[in-house]
Image (tube, rainbow, N blue to C red; front, top):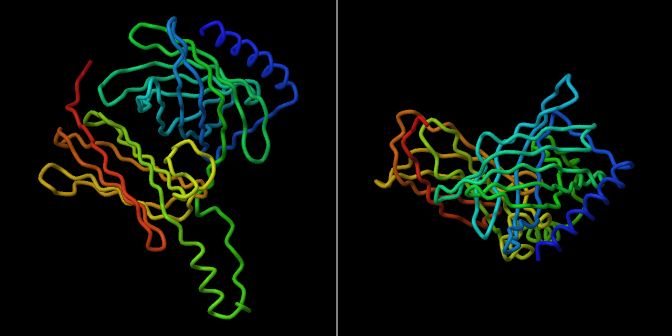
Length: 299
């Protein structure tokens, strides 16, 4: 099985290099971007499926190597979700034709993995850019060869979306009511968070809302069927039932909402319940997550 993956790596690299001569991409400092993709990680004994999903923004730099700020993200390896740590970074080379991606991630059991990936631009248009990433994942002192095919798309904030022109209705009220009812869809909410986390570190929660009929399996990486304008409420509740923190916001055109805060130094370590709710046009969906807050340790 491993030689097959090696052949995929070689062919993907040759294709990406030849195509890059004609491809171009450009990241703007005024926007955030979402990177989503799937791939494979190969050990000496088996090939495992893997996924990666993160949000980043561009930082202007006068040098030839520009840096992206990774705001949050998750990756999946061997069926387990890993939350990206704060040390993740993306560096851009050759006018965004090459991307260097590295950082650590940790799962709910405290297991850590480390990534180093080099991405080559395959193609780009108004819908986004496609990159092939090749590199290694370090897990328990074992280096795992990996390859991902990813799409990077621009996240447009709701407040920046063009407003619709208001016109005087020329249709009967009964027809208008029927059109409004068509917009009411069943919601599918998917929420992910940073857990476990230590006091004084930044907690992050990331949500996506889909039309449940278009994403019945609640695939976080699906790139269609988004629900824009859904109200998101996330309540962090202690073991005594008291709400210690509430986060609220609205999904953008990609059904995406993310928020967070720094865990205060006086925050009580322990296990908390996070209840996340999405609501639009009277339709709701909710997720319940478990948040483990640990005492800050100096390593």
